[in-house]
Image (cartoon, rainbow, N blue to C red; front, side, top):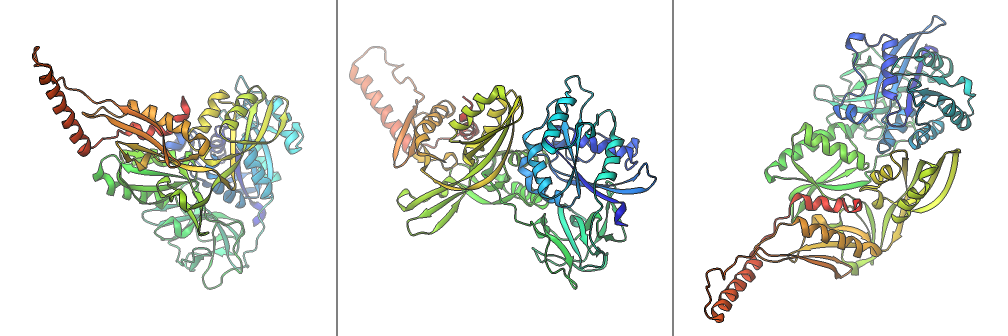
Amino acid sequence: MNEFIRNFCIIAHIDHGKSTLADRMLQLTGTITDRDMTEQVLDAMDLEREKGVTIKASAVRMEYKARNNYVYELNLIDTPGHVDFGYEVSRALEACEGALLVVDATQGIEAQTLANLYMALDADLEVIPVINKIDLPAARPKDVARDISNLLGTPEEEIIQISAKEGTSVVEVLEAIVRHVPPPEGETEEPLQALIFDSHYDSYKGVVAYVRVVNGEILPNVMLIPMASKVDFKPVEIGVFKPELQPAERLAAGEVGYVATGLKTVKECRVGDTLTQLNHPAANPLPGYHKVKPMVFAGIFPVEGEDYSDLRDALEKLNLNDASLVFEPETSHALNFGFRCGFLGMFHMEIIQERLEREYDLNIIITAPSVEYEVILKDSRVMRIDSPADLPDESQIEEIREPWMKIDIFTPTDFYGPVMDLVIKRRGIFIEQEYPTSDRVQLVFEIPLAEMIVDFFDQLKSRTRGYASLDYSFLEYRVDDLVRLEILVNGEPVDALATIVHRDQAYHKGQAVISKLKDLIPRQLFAVPIQAYAAGRVISRANVKALRKDVLAKCYGGDVTRKRKLLEKQKRGKKRMKMVGNVEIPQEAFLAVLRLGED
């Protein structure tokens, strides 16, 4: 029966109409009635709808009666649209035999379109190009068709042109899937191998694993085991996506569905793992599984100390649904108790921050993000540190290695200069360039991850008026001349403001932080010195002036010694106050470090 199954996904750059096309397919195949229809059905989270980007992958089964009068089972596996979730995309592609490449008729090919396309070609998928948004006044379908034809070799007249919003020619897309996407291979008689391409946590059914059965079959009463985590379980329920969960009797080779495991955390059932039977296991897992490694680290602290336990509960609940979120308790002198969290990238961090504030109503401070460094000590030991506060003394360090990324920037040729300037200023190294079309250039650079994590993407968008697109992947760890930049307020180091910077940039960055903090720290009754300290010396200093009380106001003339006596008394009082005084640092000061590049 596999010949009537088609497993496919949709790959596209953010906002090219992927979710809208999925909506039209669900309507055309009668999977969702017009009464139940809402925009972006597969994007269930409010955040996904607001930001116009799929964050969590999902799947849906459709029944489609083709023009040849056969009924086909179409399994659409929706993929996340952002580069931070590249691993989830790669697993979803492994579960398919075909991919729809959706390109916006007004914007053409973008960096992530290419990145996901290369992933699809590596996974040996049949790629069907589709040009969307042909109803818009600014659409250039002929030009975009020519670009896609040059890229894929598909004849221009065979590229389907649609308007997913209006529903124009979407039936042609369904027909193309039936014609061109090969049916899944795999034998039901073989030992069970099922790829987990996503999962979510349900408070009643435990972890619900989204699976593509490659070989064998899943039955409700047979014990199963993920081959990496080795936690055996009996399924609570198995079924298919319609798009809500619908129980089924079994899942056979080639089918896509879900297994409600009853397990308590997503960590026990990770994306990319292979499910097999406990008593009759497969010899080998499916290839390509690896643990997702966080790239960006930041401290999350509650503004009010009594919210600490609520923050811990919120992070634990988020972690049930998002195994890529890593956190551990952290203590800061300035901010008291909080958590050190690891994220896949800045966008992932932004999503977690918004979910903590919205869904759990928490008021939080996030410290300046940092990356994970490799520190080689004089005694040849290797340390991995993700917080500047953990960096050992300079006398013990042999060398520090930082992560470097390979980045692809797609931009109109008009913005070639501003993009070059931005990357080179951030210690980037130019590698090569290509011209996929006459008016667009693809630039390849190598750049330290630390230079990318704060506002690189925002700067790129503003310099190119939003036209540039970016894709990045981890390259390697490289040795560089790095130092810890510490900020001392009233002689006390503030660990939450510490950063690791290149030695050449320490003076400039230290001075910039001091200038901002001078305006942000409220004046006290005594003078507060703020110092930037790096490489064993103070490199910049400023004073927050003291609030002064006019103690001479009551002196109408009289002897000068009397005035001097009052001033000396005030001076002694201020000195004593400075020794015991505590300087409160406002939340804006921690954000100041983040916004250094905006001036």
